[in-house]
Image (tube, rainbow, N blue to C red; front, side, top):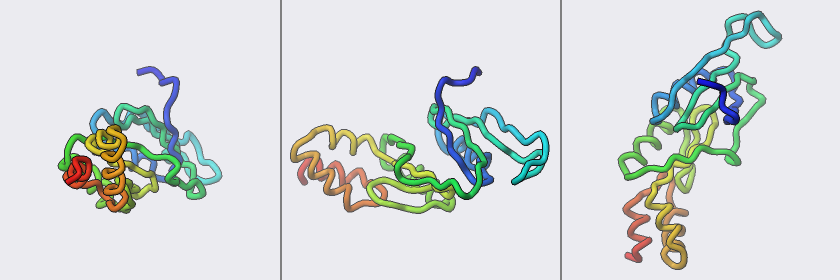
Amino acid sequence: MGMPKGRICLMLNKDAEAAARFYAGLFPDSFVETVQTAPSDYPSGKAGDVLTVEFTVLGIPCIGVNGGAHFQHGEAFSFQVITKDQQETDHYWEAIVQNGGQESVCGWCKDKWGVSWQITPQALNDAMAAGGEEAKRAFDAMLEMGKIDIAAIEAAHRGD
């Protein structure tokens, strides 16, 4: 496989390989491609330490770089995962949160490496795309949620 013209670079502390393997095991169309190690000792590590990991998550080419603890993630960047039903929504949310992550609001959570994820049911996108009062009701319902409750979004969308 040739190098993609673009990819997302995630700076991590010392566990880029663990993060990449977690994502590859959780999401479809995800895999670890290459792990590159240091050919010799360097100021913050030793020969053989993992430097970079090339991987794909949800079909998106990525590279994880073990850049050190001073690089921190924030909510300005996130992966959005579109889910088809509550079971899939629950599966991804719980896998991330129960693996050392943390819950947030409106369908957002963070994994244990600090990377933000939006676990977004298609039903929420559909409700928002409706516009007008339907979208307002769904949006207002979403603002009260952590993990998205599809039945509650659909009820708000309908006006129930």
